[in-house]
Amino acid sequence: MTRYGPLPDAPEEERLDQRVLTTLEGLSGRLAFSGLRRVLGSHPESLSRSLRRLQREGLVERTDDGYRAIHPAAGRGEPADREMRAIAAIDLPPGAPASTVLGRLAGRWFGTLRWVGVLERAEGQLLAWARRSGEGLVLLGLRRGVLRVYVPALRAGDDPAEAEEAAYELLFHAVETLRPSGHADALGPGAGIRAFDLVAGPLLRAN
Image (cartoon, rainbow, N blue to C red; front, side, top):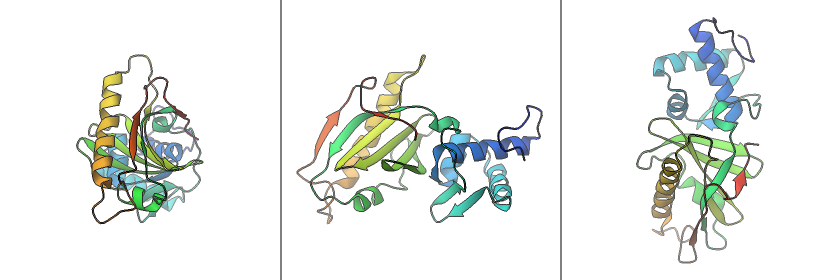
């Protein structure tokens, strides 16, 4: 298999293998099968065969919570090569452990948002969802007691309303999920929500 991009007339299987590998490398994390299928828009059986081929070649491995590239190469994947901007933030009460907060959100579907997987960044883990259509990732991360929701920075022709709608949908469900219900160390009375402008909000670069 051609590792850095198949020729235009390459067999369909090889093109899919390259798309899978490029996506896993670019996102640099662990993607659920359903999340990877949604991002790629691929047929489940075709994707299964592709992942098996990539595993046999030693390029991809299956973990308990998804698939990952064994040698990720940041920035090569199309979904991950865009800057992300924080559109909203939740100030958590002091002492809220990241493992508890993120653990209660990971793997869940929220409204029109479908679970994709966990991305690894220098700042820590980011949880990733996609809209039902597979378009537009929405990320959520926790750092220094602040839970932030990120969406891709706007490009020419992008509809800011769609990005904001997806971000606030995730924010709403995150707040509802983290409300105390026997978990006093999650979202409590000390939490506060802040909203940012989509263009001027805090920036997160993909690695």
